[in-house]
Amino acid sequence: MGSQIDWSALVAQAWAVRQQAYAPYSKFAVGAALLTDSGDVFTGCNVENASFGLTICAERVAVTAAVAAGSRKFAGIALVADTAEPVLPCGACRQFLAEFNPQLEIYCSGRDRHQVFVLPDLLPSPFSGLQEGLR
Image 1 (tube, rainbow, N blue to C red):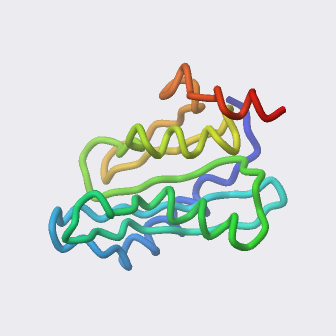
Image 2 (image 1 turned 120 degrees about the horizontal axis):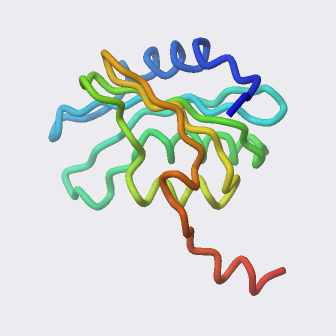
């Protein structure tokens, strides 16, 4: 991938914000750190709800924080969870991320391993029909 992203700094921020996760039902805490093209970082953690469909993932928390602050161009995101294998974004988050950068770099980490992907590796055919119609 050859990017210039300082993954170690993003991963550290993702682990730090993971501590704020609200996951009383699944006990599965996730942290995310999103890097904008301008070098700003927005973090997010998952927030569960008794009505499970209202739960929001860490990735979407980070993206919505960035958008609320006026950022819409993203270079990479780091995701962390206390799992042996790297944690990957769910399908909804993959589509959500593709809205802003279909070539986004994604650093997925667990306790013991990590793996870096570009979004098309995880979502080869994102939905874009409405976007295309608006151009």
